[in-house]
Amino acid sequence: MKAKIHITLKNGVLDPQGKAIENALDHLGFSGINQVRQGKYIELALDETSHDKASAQLKEMCEKLLANTVVENYQFELVD
Image (cartoon, rainbow, N blue to C red; front, side, top):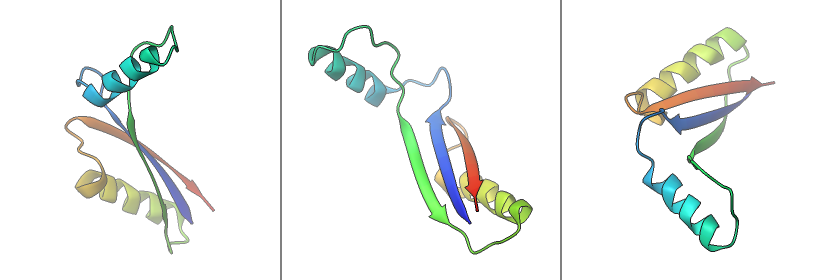
């Protein structure tokens, strides 16, 4: 089973890297781009065959290591 995990900063948390990307795009001539937010994308393969058990494992992984839940949100998708 494959897991696709998206981690993003919560609304209201400053995103200096997103702001730098926004400024760089503007300097490259791409206009009309506002409020760029950046995040992380992680893929991993799980040996687990139960969707419920895999979801529980992923939730625990995200909350213990992959995401800083104080300032980040996460969501994941399981693909067979």
